[in-house]
Length: 113
Image (cartoon, rainbow, N blue to C red; front, side, top):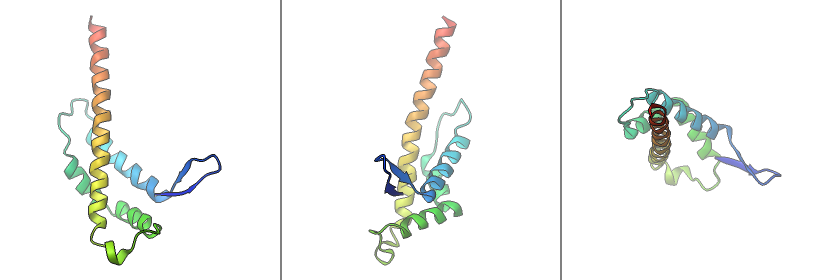
């Protein structure tokens, strides 16, 4: 997911990883665009993302460029790794979304006082 360490000691994210993150973020924002969202099914979101052809292509590219990955040995694990990545990403984003909603509610309460 990262290619090299740059001269300023920061990691350079690969194009495939960028695509993966952008598709994930877009899907999350579409699902949570409503301010009154009460429940987010992260498992169905993760499954839908894992089935997306652009996601699969990007993930395959990431794996092909990973020196530690042996396709023959791990080929059955790849879909599980991808789905687990999305579940973890969605959980983190849900915490962030919740925090943002709490801040909005507190700001509204302050205005009403």
